[in-house]
Image 1 (cartoon, rainbow, N blue to C red):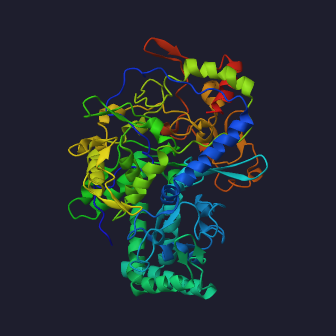
Image 2: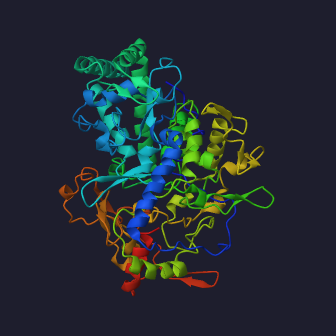
Amino acid sequence: MKKTTPLCFLIGIFLLVACSEKTLEAPEPPAVVKQTPTNWSTYQREKSQEKQQYIRDHQSAYDWFSDFAFSETDGVPYIILRLLPVVAPDIWGSEENFLDVVGLFNDERQAGYPMPRGIGISALGRKEAFSHIDYTSFTCAACHIGRVQLDDGTTEYIDGGVNSEFNIVLYRVKVYQTLERLFKLAKNEDQKQQLIIDGFLSALEKAQAKSPTFFYKNYRNAWIHLDANYEKKQIELFTESAAQYITDFATRAENEYHGYAALLNKNYAGLQERALQGFAGMADATGISAVNGYIGLKQGTFTKHFASFVLPTSPGMTDFMSVWEQDKRKAQWDKNQEQLINGGGQWNGNIPIPMYRNLAAQLTLGLDNNDIRVAAFGVELLDGLPASVYPFDVDIDLAKKGQGLFTEHCADCHQPHNGKIYTNLGVNLDRSYVVNWLIRKGGIDGFYKACSPDTSVNMNGKAFKPCAEFDGVSLKGKKQLIMSANKTHHGYNARPLSGIWAQAPYLHTGSVPTVYHLLVPSERPDSFVKSQLTYDQKHLGFTWQETASASANTLAAEHSYIFDTTSFPTFSKIGHDTDIVENGKTYKLDWSDDKDSVWALIEYMKTL
């Protein structure tokens, strides 16, 4: 089994927006507020076309973001992943897409692709077809391409948004359950290992008997054809060392399962059983990353007693974030080009440099030989990727009234390049304390090892050093800027609200279902439904009522669940519910006494 370096993979997949090393005392200059469109249907059509054109103009970067595996030589062997439903069909999903059970969906725009959106196959990025077996990993799209059901029942995809259905923890639990199914009768470790090997090899025989294109479905795109011959050769490569591949896969899967259980025991006492099933659309990303370090230490003779020290000291469960329009959240150099300021938008501000934010996503999985081109193309794509326009109708006259209210009470904080960390909103602060000194050190060292200023890669036929500089300034000698100092992010950013309609539910743990409930805190429910894909256009959020029939939503009924904000302190619905004073100005956060203004604000925020 590949050895996991204890401190190299300790930062989470969802630290994907900029932060600042120094916080600002006040946002400057005054926020420029977006004007309400005069004709909504025309504006809506133009914004949709603008986004489609942007993706076409950055097609290569989009493909790497959505479809490319994080490593060519590590991850889950493709053949093993594809065999999971053959080994345990009752644990996994439909024949059409067995990963739908963990919230990865078939994207209609991806015709013929043999896996759902969010699974990358190393074949797509490898120059020599048979230099390795094919490996898979989750891609950026697993968390950041979502979907919504429109009024006519069709699906609209939200590129750069949130996949509220994806449940990474449940995936790992189901993998472990699959292995457990195979080894449950084993009397010792050797027998356990052999039963797992035999189970997968038997499943391989069944799969081959079904079809010569069972694994790759004869997939073809502009540069590769995974036909029956390709499949045959990949199977031959796999079978040459099948026992080792299967053993390595099983060992890693068990370690990840037990490591996550250790995280739950440390930080989620009383919630372990529920948390072990995961929360679709959410994750304790830093905790999952730290589990890789935990695993590495547990394997050492002398270090196993210290393994728990690398796990965060507080719960870090948060909602996934939208990752579009990174240019609005981009940090800037101070006048001496020594520190990064004026960035913001990530939950609490940890990683100011876009390349390293994207690397955080990759290192979370704990893979060897990470393909840093994925992170580099992500920087290219996300810098200017437009937010998805609100896909339903808007009352323009009412929105115009809301624009003034937004200007007065919201825009100063939720403006681009506001790096201030807010500690006065009354929200639970657990997430803002998960990065301790040890995790920060491990993150900096791990990121720098993966990509230093001298690291060079080939991108679109040209040599490129993605970590050589940031915004025109050399990064040599600036290793400590990879992650901001811990004391600067014990609170939360107020990020720009572009595409805020698609970010529901709200607050960093998604504990408030709609914008209405954010503005009227007295009516926030203790529990509500998450991961529905139909939309509550009145209150501005995805369908949330517990009384709503799950069968009415043909897309997400299987993945929706009741989220109880009272079940654990981190999930508290409290916060952003009391008026605050910043620099002598009072900002209204509780609008319970002015419902007319609430509806106007909601209508305006639909246009953002």
